[in-house]
Amino acid sequence: MTDDRQTTKERLLDAAERLFAERRFEEVSVRELAAAAGVNTAAVNYHFQGKDNFFAEVVRRRFLVQRDRTLASLAEAVAAGGEKPPLDAIIRSMVGTYLHGALATREGAGVMAVIAREMHTSGGTHHAAVFKDMIAPVFAAFSGAMRKARPSLRQDEVNWLIASVVGQVHHFIMRRLKWESLPEGDEVRAFMAHAFPVLAEPVEAYVVRITDHITRFSVAAIDGMHPEVTP
Amino acid sequence: MTDDRQTTKERLLDAAERLFAERRFEEVSVRELAAAAGVNTAAVNYHFQGKDNFFAEVVRRRFLVQRDRTLASLAEAVAAGGEKPPLDAIIRSMVGTYLHGALATREGAGVMAVIAREMHTSGGTHHAAVFKDMIAPVFAAFSGAMRKARPSLRQDEVNWLIASVVGQVHHFIMRRLKWESLPEGDEVRAFMAHAFPVLAEPVEAYVVRITDHITRFSVAAIDGMHPEVTP
DNA sequence: GGCCAATTTAAACACTTGTTTTAGATGCGC
DNA sequence: GCGCATCTAAAACAAGTGTTTAAATTGGCC
Image (cartoon, rainbow over all chains, first blue to last red; front, top):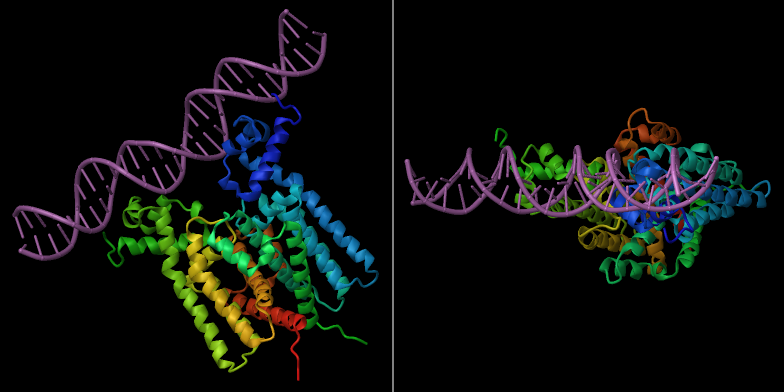
């Protein structure tokens, strides 16, 4: 091999991360993965014993990093807030790191997009692992932080609120990904950009702007639905 | 043919509506569609000139009905409110009919699920038509109604608010569809039902409950972000 | 250098996909 | 009954899938 700076295994994982970011599992063929990595087709099966395992490995390699980043950011926001951290900071932390991880970071982008997509599908072998290792811990941490910020909230109320926040986050992630996937002259793309000029801005600006909107929208909603009893 | 109560064309359309409701376009094969309809495989190509056209026909047959139902419900809510219809009624109408159409009606369920899914994918030939005929008019009507209810809102502000509402709606639709697609003993399913007991209830109850939550959440958010100037 | 295991390669395999072909059945006006 | 257009049927087609095979190459170690 002329370029020995990476092993075949690593080249495959990197190429897969890139391809799976923009197309779903079934839409990317093994031959295409191998070609993008510049390796032989059979390498996928030799090193990973099948496409399924390979995909699982691609996801697993990155998403724990992203999860820990999210948890760390949340923990920081909680710690900075003292005994009763501000709700605003908690939601902003969650939404911000999630959006950033899903759209702006080169490393995590693929995986987060995968998760956001797989969340919305029946899913094969992977979904149990993704749920247990990624979604459940983040959900638990988010939930705990919110109850610290608003101790009067019941657990089931918190669950509803989180669902509304996550729904918005996913929607804006998908909206961006869809927009990016449309060709330059597409009329739908034009329509979207007209209604949402922020789509045309660089991804970092998009993330900041969306984070701000979701945070303010959600905090206002929570304060309105569950007003704090001011002594 | 022994059962002449439906033509081959109609049987195909009905079967397709059913199958496309739970699996995406590429996941359902022509052979399977034909088998489910009890017709020959080649019938799809004979009557519809290809799988793509067939799919487009399946969607088009129903989604205009759903669109008109949504617009009618919204128009009614606006009309009932007089000069300045209550925001609550408008959002409840939109969210309610959308959720109901997507989850509870046997006829529209498939198509709405398709749209909710296709909204979040690159999409092939269909997406332009879906956007122009379905999403754009509904968006315009929703947007107009909201500006009637809150005349002080600018158009771009309304767009942001609608995005947050729609994001929630899609999320709760997908959550239900995902839950229904999971097998009885699945641990993810158990986790979801534990955090959201309403998932275990009949779909009508689910729709009502979700509609209420999204409406109250969103109205509180809008009132909090853009308080009305009370003279 | 020579051996052996690990890796890479090109080819083939078994299977599924959407579509086309070719022949046959059916229904209807005359 | 005949003729004709419509429809259906089974089979074949070409292309693509994930995977396996079997030979070739590589790289380290004695």
